[in-house]
Length: 178
Ligand code: RP5
Image 1: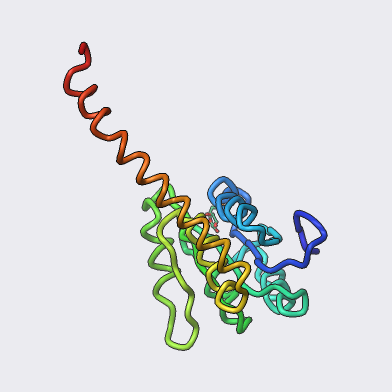
Image 2: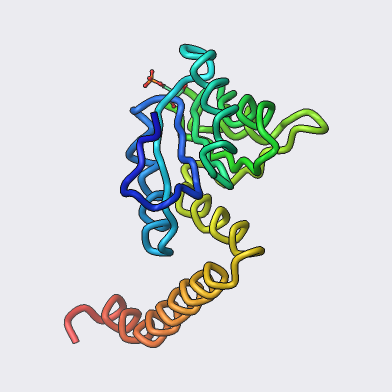
C-alpha cells in the first residue's frame, strides 16, 4: 500500500491526518526531492482510521523506511500514535487549524509523555520537517549530509544576494519618484 513517487527504496514516510493537509505537507516532499531522498505519502487518520494507522506504523521498518514525517491539525494525535508504534524517529508537523490557528495542533504534538518523543517543528513548517528528516538520515549517510550542506550554502548565498539588494530597495521605498 506504499504510495511512493518512484521505484527507489523509500527512506522517509510522509503521512497526514487528512488529504486537506496536503497543501502544507507537499513542502516536505518538495525539499526531499531537492535532496534526492525517496519518500512515500499517505493520508490516514489516528481517529477515523486507527487500525490502518497502527498497520502503517508497524509496517514501516519492514519496508525500509527510516524516518517518519507526520502532519496533523486540531487534536493532532497522529504523530504521537505513530511514535508509540515504532522505534523510528518521528517528526511532527502541526497543521494550522481554522478554530485555533494551529496552537491546538502544536500543543497536541509537542507535549508527548516521557518515553515517546516526537520531534516537533513549527506550525505548517513541513519544509523544515523535510530538512530535519534529511539531517537525521545524513548522520549516517555522508552523501545526504553533503546535500544538506549544499542546501544550506545555497540558502546562505540567497540571503547574501538579497542583502546586497536591500539598500537599493530602501532607497526606492523612501524616494519612489527618484
Ligand atoms: C485532522 O483534522 C487533520 O490532520 C486535519 O488537519 C483536520 C481536519 O481534517 P478534515 O476534516 O479536513 O478531514 O485530523
